[in-house]
Amino acid sequence: MVLPRFLLLAAFATVLPGAEEYTYWVDPCTPEASRATGCDAGDTELARWALEAWQRESNGALVFRKSDTAAHARITIHWTNGQSNLYGETVPTMVDGKPGGIIYVLPDTRSLGPGIDAATRTDPLLRDAIVYLTCLHESGHALGLRHTRAFADIMYSFGYGGDIVAYFERYRQMLKTRADIAAHSGISDADRIALRATVGH
Image 1 (cartoon, rainbow, N blue to C red):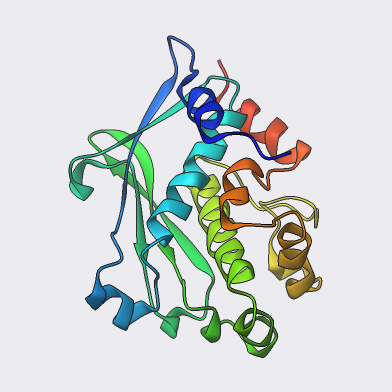
Image 2 (image 1 turned 90 degrees about the vertical axis):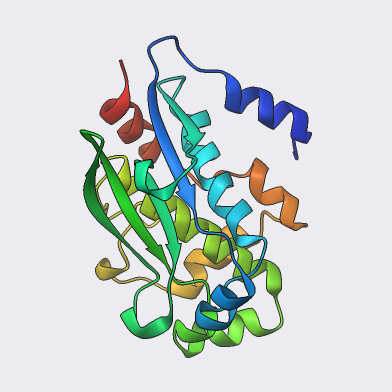
């Protein structure tokens, strides 16, 4: 079931009084950035939806607030090109004395191998799903979550094998429109348990 946007926002705003605040910054996809990385204007929204998903699943332990500048954001998300040969990467960092992460996400699915390239050429929604799930996975690392071996988890590592296209297609099948991404977190029960153990009070 797709929740109305106002209900999603209400859920996003429900936090505990002692919730851990993470300031964040997502690079806008300017025309120059789009030419350099293949990002789309809506990718910033996909990244924000990923953070909203972690907040909803944290049981009130996390709250994300957009920073006025990247310099003071505990989590920053940058769009990158295919030179890294990675879907995404997270570099741990300290910001204003608090732990965070610098995240790099590759939004150009044409650079992710022939299987992903072929699957996304005729399915823009699959492409958006991949960018969203990559933001979700990498921001999980920024929150302290580690890789898992379970194919069902968002924190699963492709280093353990498995059908990569099938991994993303499984999530894609839950979507009818792009807006559905905001209602389907992609976070497994095991991810949820790990998150609450990591950031819970």
